[in-house]
Image (cartoon, rainbow over all chains, first blue to last red; front, top):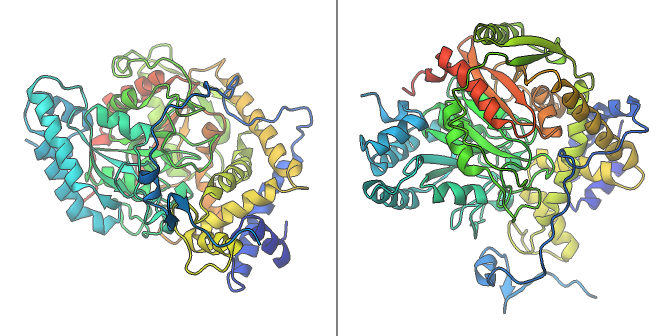
Amino acid sequence: MSLTREHVESIAHLARLAITQDELPAYVDSLSRILSFVEQLNAVEARDVEPMAHPLAGQVQRLRPDEPEQMNSREKYQANAPCTEAGLYLVPKVIE
Amino acid sequence: MSELHHLTLSEISAGLSKRSFSSVELTRHFLARIEQGAAALNAIITTCEEQALAAARQADEALAKGRAGPLTGAPIVHKDIFCTDGVLTTCASRMLSNFIAPYDATVVERLARAGVVTLAKANMDEFAMGSSNETSWYGPVKNPWDPRRTPGGSSGGSAAAVAARLAPAATGTDTGGSIRQPAALTGLTGLKPTYGRVSRYGMIAFASSLDQAGTLTHTAHDAALLLGVMAGFDPRDSTSVDEPVPDYVAALDQPLTGLKIGLLKEFFDEGLQSENAALVREALRVYEKLGASLVEVSLPNMPLSVPTYYVVAPAECSSNLSRFDGVRFGHRCKDPVDLMDMYKRSRGEGFGAEVKRRIMTGAYVLSAGYYDAYYLQAQKVRRLITDDFARAFTQVDVIMGPTTPTPAFELGAKVHDPVTMYLNDIYTIAANLAGLPAISVPCGFVDALPVGLQIIGAHFAEAKLLNVAHAYQKETQWTRRIPPGFE
């Protein structure tokens, strides 16, 4: 599967990754190789096979009662934040 | 008395309880070993000297008061993918090079509660993506058996540290072989438990349906000691299985008579180097002497495991790594002009090339128009592979074969084509897809480089796996070999 530059640029946009024009050819090449490699899966007859999302049969999403359990550790967790103010995370303007 | 760093974890446990040495003595000894040896191998990202000595002192107090367990005071290294409260946790990525974890992973917490001393955080492939520890932001790790060669990956730092006797044991993670392959390339015992056996809480996620925490140790006995503490239900991990934890140590010495070993036809293919194959066959003869019988089994869909993995794992990784957006933690680019710019440049700068390749592969196979052809199809093939194993385990107790196609390869040899690198995991990946427990044990040397024998078990059969591995280790001496220069 040979990808085009435009194709890789749109995937990079979907994945929110900045790829420079210099870096682009290497990614086009390596992604094309990887996709060519995985294409052999298409030849497998699996029409009636149930897809498997988890390796163990019978796993279900466990739920717990909607009751508060942990203490508020906001300050500890925000110690790693790039930019905060009054307990809020600051980012560039989102709403025009 | 031999050097403290020649001791296995179980010998250390015995020595501590007999008070032949103290935990502080041991900890100082290994911290010094790390200081001397880690730079040459680049195996360690962060050393936790103060915390280690404080924990060692506490352990010595517990030992003196007779309130100690088998692991109290034993030092260990954690792969830098496990969150360690108050300590830098980087996943070997620029993205987290400033991240001080605000909590302990369950694995770290349980081992600490058992009195284990954390010496350091080990280098690894970035976000656990790699088979050679060459993708780390902190530089590649060298194999102590030959520093021009890779120790394997992604738990390369953990493997190199234990093989070089900088620590008696280490934790690792295994998504496609990242414990077993480095164990094989460095002469260690590497255990990947059943999916859901060990909690993933606080273990930074790569591929959530494949990731498992495990151990890199010299022996199966050591692995049994650690697994007994690490394993068990954790309500904080929604995929944790509520299955009782057996006494792995007590089960080690069961006799092997009647054991049926499956020889996987598809493992002995043209990719397998002939000397590796010969050593694996010799190991199988040891098992026959111990009373086991060999049965040829076939897993016809097994050769599809690598392409299946390289659809499923990147898809899951693209989802898991979307949390790294420069907002709440991790790398943020300078002077973002708007939100989109902040996301793209923070992630573009924070992630290395292999991580970006996998995120983009994942985004592609999950995108509209391609989801059915790639991702859904891969999930179907995953079921075919898993069903093959289920059928095989009705005929045999364990499946054996090589862990890797060749011994350790040279650094830089496989970085040019990602697919060449991916094929290193050709024998290990299927166990992750099927969620099965698997272990690699050292079984000999080719040109002075270690070779591993892989043993795969049925779900939750870790006690059997460890028993089978231990039986082989009682008959052989591979676990005692030390890389020249690290004695």
